[in-house]
Image (cartoon, rainbow over all chains, first blue to last red):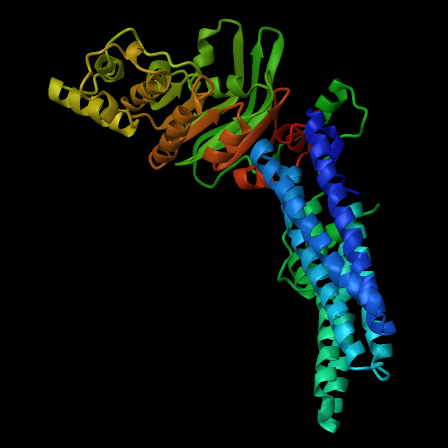
Length: 238
Length: 292
């Protein structure tokens, strides 16, 4: 595996700065993962307290984003990093933007859960689908953070492909909700909330794909954004 | 972990890695060929299999490198890596060192630099050089610039010489600052102005290539920025090879970058590629400030 050798700069201080940034990203990743897990649990188990906690803890995610951003700016200004160091900083700046947005999606799950609890909805017909979708994106997020931590390009490419499953699952759920809406328009408010929850989960999958793409850039220096996996295969395999 | 699958899919060559621990000799022996693209489609100067010796000691090993038309190529590497030695071969400055011996092929527009019928003095008019420390002659600003055109007989009268001097000072971005005191000694100028005077002096003989050996290392950031701006303008008309210890400078001014290590040319690529995704581990280590 290609390693970044963050500990091999002549400047020990630079080693420490980069290592600190990397560790903070992993801390932020852990927090965001926890937020998604709690948001999903709050939704599925109609847990009002947990939903409130998720909504409140979003500020911690935002704070970490600002803090890491600031560190990256300082390193850019003071160290003028190049090559893998530069790619690390660029990647981190992008990864934390996606993590912050995943945090926002988790916060939405918390908010909509509370709304649904108020509407006294127990999601009988959607719990199974939402749980399934939630588990899919949770594992994508966890594995993409793992790929970032391990600089594992193979894993990143494999995880990115799993987004198709997520999209399929989301579309199925959307169809189900549309049908239900036509059958019983009085439920519109509730059904919309559920749709938004599903949408939030689906977006977590998209952001996880972005993180995987950044991992490929970080390790290989190749930008694979906006290229489908089939294209990657046909363009790069000679 | 194995990255073969990704490497295949992305078609990315594996980085050349040196297994640790290597002795310096082992590391040196493993540098068998240059990574990247040493040749260009439109070369101004071409070099191949260049070896340089100072007495018994070999300073350059089998270097192949083109310098393209209207491009700035930066040569970087740790002290003693041979980059200045190589640069000095390009206009036969090493001829002045009795123990120095150069083998291999070097040519300017296809003409052999070390051919028997080539006059090194005329060569140095075609391939000019700017040194690390500004070294104006102890003459007036005017005479500094007029010196080359005079000895090469590039003007037939005073008016023509005036034109050359003014034009060269303008191209070097110095004219507006000195136009009222062309008779003042060149040494009365500030460091940055002196360096631009030296650049004007090399331009005055209408060279085709300009070699620069750390032209900004004795200058402050503002003077450096002016010289870098000037290099970018000069690129429209000349091929420029610059040796620099400042990686940021190489990144700022050049289109291609060549990394030298222990007398070998390790990697040549577009500057963008070298500074974002170098292909050789030694290049990566050098430009990121890691132990090499």
